[in-house]
Amino acid sequence: MAPSARRGPYFCGIDAAMDVVTGKWKSLILWELDHHGTRRFAELRRGLPGVSEKMLIQHLREMEEDGLVHREVYRQVPPKVEYSLTEHGVSLNAALASLGQWGTERIRRIGAEKIAPEGVGTDR
Amino acid sequence: MAPSARRGPYFCGIDAAMDVVTGKWKSLILWELDHHGTRRFAELRRGLPGVSEKMLIQHLREMEEDGLVHREVYRQVPPKVEYSLTEHGVSLNAALASLGQWGTERIRRIGAEKIAPEGVGTDR
DNA sequence: TCGGGTACTCACCTCCGGGTAAGTGCCCCC
DNA sequence: GGGGGCACTTACCCGGAGGTGAGTACCCGA
Image 1 (cartoon, protein in one colour):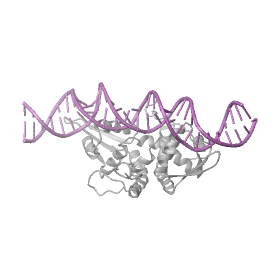
Image 2 (image 1 turned 90 degrees about the horizontal axis):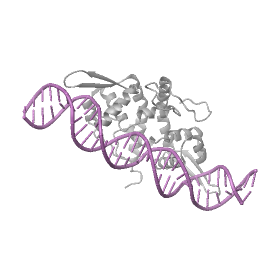
Image 3 (image 1 turned 180 degrees about the vertical axis):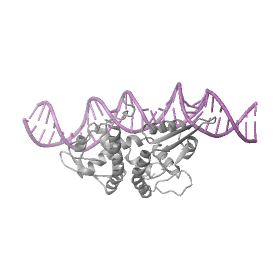
Image 4 (image 1 turned 90 degrees about the vertical axis):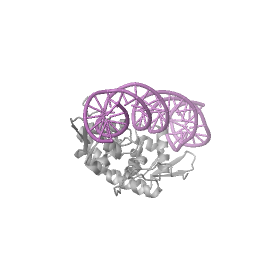
């Protein structure tokens, strides 16, 4: 089987997109990478409070397979790896924008708590 | 605790929306209801090939709690219940549109199979 | 020399999302 | 009079998503 054919048949575009974005941290990773442009592994870990290293790597690998993130390895003595979004990742993130707005609306409506990952004046 | 406070604190709008849309059939239910306007339980079941009655009800109940769908019961001898989208459901569906397009794009890119639920000339 | 950082891998465990199957009370149609 | 449809409910089970914690190979600063 072709390496990228691992995902099942879909009913519609929505669940094809869902398939790629489902995972506790994937949308946050997308957001982090889009927001910062490029991030190292440890930076991502620090940016997503509560994520385990195992899940971070697992999600990053899957997103790489799915062509959403690019992984650049610098062969150095203290290892250095940089992650960034591919154009597909960027466009997915753009497609998520309206959903993000809806969610923000909803948070306001139900008055849920919101954990801002860190400082920067973010809406969305 | 307030009845609608059952959902945890969120990092951002995306996962607030995800929280509501996560579940194997929820996006499909949204789509079915949006497409047909109003549907009975058995119609939904037939419209979502492979769904189990248990999951259908469970998802419908959650979506009702979340204020996405409206449940209208007609007290009749053969029971009749009609489900439809609330305005929040409709707006969520609208917010999912761009994601659906992205997904459709992706399906084309990777050449995955697509199961059209039933006839009607659908994109998205 | 010891602790901490970098980017991981591996083994193990838990919880719950989701599936299967059966039952319910009432009706209509063959 | 029995089979099927309606809208569910209940009990049971399984697999996988995700968490925990340890280990690795190397380096740097205190």
